[in-house]
Length: 148
Image (cartoon, rainbow, N blue to C red; front, side, top):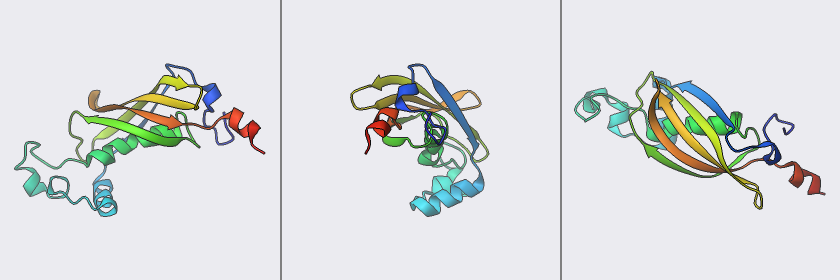
């Protein structure tokens, strides 16, 4: 573990996993729209959203996917990890009030570059809403010991 209680690359093993869950609130959606500039009516206008295939408002996909980032930064590999890439497939909508649970699992370890490939899955009440994979660079004891 590193001094921030994150896993160093050398601590990781294929199959290790961690979860993080968050309930998406009305405030989250409004604040995400403001921060991102994504004011799509399907996210912020209930009357319009009722006329869509979703039959009501849905959370921004990237807001829902951000729970993956929380799982990576806070749980596995944890503090100090740098995100390098993420592939996402959106499978089902997330609605205000839904609790999104992200699970990250170590899929591959690249020893040469100290990179980790994680499978990333988000569920709401057991139903997959997002799946994909991420490439991250965790902290490394080896790199710290080699530093001047």
